[in-house]
Length: 148
Image (cartoon, rainbow, N blue to C red; front, side):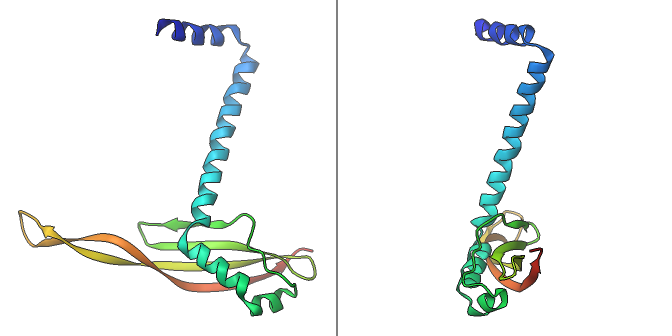
């Protein structure tokens, strides 16, 4: 165990300050990128985001609105999911319109908590517990194409 610690210390001792700063910056960038990838995955895999993407890709009205032959929801999804408050909002890319502008859809949803009766507590009546949520799509709007 001491040999590992001494090797690590000798690495720090024999490396220049610039090299140490570079190593720390590289490690920090790796942590940030990993966090962003995990967040994007969490947003994309949320049931509301998946359902909204399916509906948008199949919608003939969205194709006409964009003036393009195909709706693509690929790209970076923005937004949040707040489990405590039971709300979610997403900004989903729809691809490019016929004039070249980028179009987006904004989706808002709320969770309706399904309660499961709990066991009776020693001090009183049964306690209800939050078991899971049923997400309800409350709002879906299309943002006009920008740029292009």
